[in-house]
Image (cartoon, rainbow over all chains, first blue to last red; front, side, top):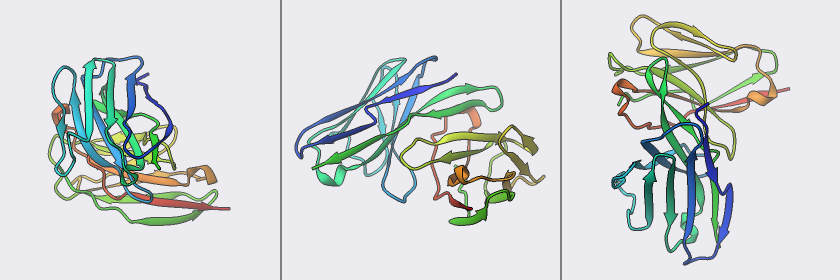
Length: 118
Length: 111
């Protein structure tokens, strides 16, 4: 259980265009989802926290107007990279908080989206 | 959030036991310790979680000393497919914490 489906798995777009990445919780309701970015050989960097029905909370240094996050339902959060540039090329990963029998809460991750901006 | 420190990389051979230690000196009373595994171009995958003493599941064991300032992930008889990055995270108290990843440990298993 607690599966998060992320699409697309990879996308190539032209510089200046926008790209939308979807993250769906398949068998549970995710009131809170997280978006990460990961560059090659580096760790995951948290970009923002999205809560269903409210505005996302962005980490310091992340441009909220460039990385639009929408969490309109309990099963879907989307990340839109607007006016993408080559430096936005990265691996984007979503995560959802789920109930855990041990600690009360756990986290499950999507499979990631490889974005290449040309 | 408790900061974690892990070795940057480790090497092992097939069939050996691998122990990865994580330091978390500032762990809070209600925090749990969780380990994730990540393969290239994939999202992290949950391995094991614990609060104290020892936890074992079908893939790993987690050893946590009484002071909880460190923890050790033990992978028995590793195979080539265990080559991955392993992350140690702490801080699930109240369920409202966001996951902040450290650098992780890059494990390379050789034939």
